[in-house]
Image (cartoon, rainbow, N blue to C red; front, side):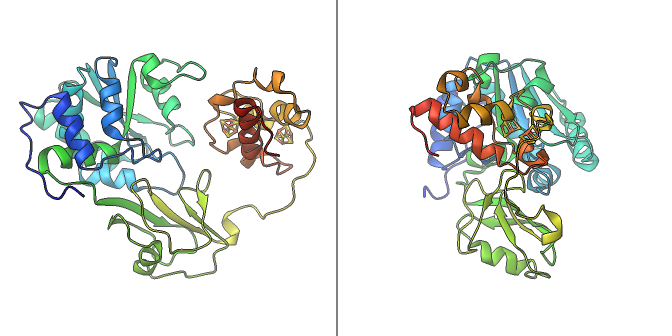
Length: 335
Ligand code: SF4
Ligand code: SF4
C-alpha cells in the first residue's frame, strides 16, 4: 500500500510518470481481468488510434459501471483525456448502454461544458454480450479483432470505466486503489443497491448492508448470472475486480437438471457472438480429435455462456469449449 501520493500536474504528465503512478497506486483492470494497468499503458503507447472507455455492463443485473459513470463522469472524462494524451491517441469513445439515458445526459452535459475535444459518447444496444471487449471494438470502429488476436491488432485499447476512474484518482488525487463500486442484487436480496466499498470487505457485510436475504437463495455469484463464479461462502472478500454479488432466487434461473442429448437444433451456433460452433466442438472433443479442434478457433471463446444458456438439452457447452481448448493448448485431456 503506497498511501496518499502527491497529485501530478495534468499538463506535464508523461507516459512514464502515469505508468509509474498507476503501478504505485495498485491500479489493475477492474472489468474482470485484473491485468496490471501500467503494463497495458506501456504496451498500448503509440500503437492505438482509439481508446474505448467501457461503461457498458458486460452482464445482466450488474449496474456498478453505469452508476459510476452517472455519478463520477467529470473524473472519468478527465482520466480518459489524460490517458489519450499519454498514449498519443486521436479518439476517445465512452461507451454505455442505450437505456442509461441519465448517464448519457450527464456525460454530454460535461462534454458540452468543457468542449469535447477528442472525447465522444456512444451508446450500444442493451443486449448481452455487447459489452464484451471484442464486440465493443467492432461496434465502435467496425474493426474485427483477428482470431487469437488482441485489441492492439486493430489499433484499439479498451479500459473499463472503473479502471479509468481509478487512474484519475491515482494521477490527480494521489489516491491508491482501495475502494470500488459493487452491485449487490438478485431476487433474493432484500434491498438491492450499488455500494462504494473498501477492497477487502467480506461479501457477508455487503449483503447485511442490503438487509440480508428476503428469500432463500440457491445460487450466489461473484459477477453476473452468465459468467459469474459460484460462491459457497460469503466469507470471501471484495477484490479489485469484484463488480457484483448476485444472489438468485430459485425462480430466476433454470433448475439444475442433468445434461440431455444434443438434438442438433443449432441454437448454440446461432447464439455464439464469436461465430463458433459449440455443438461441433463438443463432438470433436468426444472423439478427442485434436486436429479438428485446432481448426475451430477455440481461442476466440470469451466464455460468455450464451451457448449453455440457450441449449434446450442443458449441455454445459462453456465447460466443453474450455476442456477442448485445454486439450488443444496443452495436448492433454482434462476430461
Ligand atoms: S461461451 Fe459459447 S457462445 Fe460464448 S463465445 Fe464461447 S462458444 Fe460462443
Ligand atoms: S443448442 Fe444444444 S441441443 Fe442444440 S445443437 Fe447446440 S448442443 Fe445440440
